[in-house]
Image 1 (cartoon, rainbow, N blue to C red):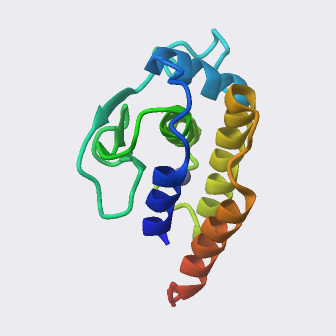
Image 2 (cartoon, rainbow, N blue to C red; image 1 turned 45 degrees about the horizontal axis):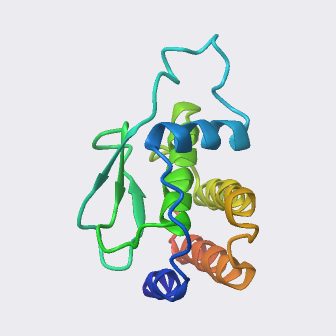
Length: 159
Ligand SMILES: [Zn+2]
């Protein structure tokens, strides 16, 4: 399935490069997510997480590794520059915001992690509408979220 996401990216027209900086994408992620813009939380929301390109597990476009370095978002170097790539940075920043709020950690039940994905894709899609006029492809999103839900059902419950 994740291979399919890469295929989707490669089939999308490159379009005009938006030349968005990580700081701009971080601002967009906060605005569209509705969290962490408050000056009451400067220590938690000070500056964007860094974005670095890195080899990722096969098929991954972006990754947020909260357990290794919670301020770094990884993007696969093979992902073409353009709005779709930037939208995945926004997506991973939403996961950063979720981590700040304690919604990403090993104790979070699997269905809640699906809800985290729903939220991240929702913000990503709204960002794409703003920048390109088109949402994240609904059919692709439906399949991605279905796969997340099926992964949860595959987990054998403890005790
Ligand atoms: Zn995600």
